[in-house]
Image (cartoon, rainbow, N blue to C red; front, top):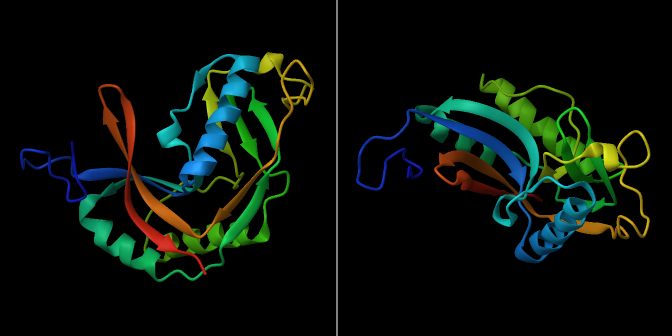
Length: 199
């Protein structure tokens, strides 16, 4: 499997590009809470659970980038100064267009919007392409969910005995990470290439 230099375990040259994204990564305690919430959503809506070790909140999706540009990218990320992020993941939804069930903050905190803005500005300045769609903070917990079971019509998962009571989760993030998505025979693996402290 490729390491950060793009070499396989036996030393052969690996892929010349890396599939990358920037994210907030939960600690072990929060990851366990999110995984438990995922099981609740799966029980209500069916589908395929996100593996606990891959649970994250995407900040910016970069996509494929030449490995020769990784040092430049990582140096640029190290120069970003942004405040730590604290948010409440206080509701669950299910998007009908892609059958993804997730938890999210009802209101995206200003610190998170500011962080995303600074990351996008740094990528733009370095002429590194990225997904420029409007930002919507969310943590994917179930794929292939039957969103028709969600209530009301817009996909909100109700806090009823049938679905279970939703308990808001607090996320205090003191760093963001650069992650490589690596395909494997048993599914995608996420390798953290670098972590960057928030103020």
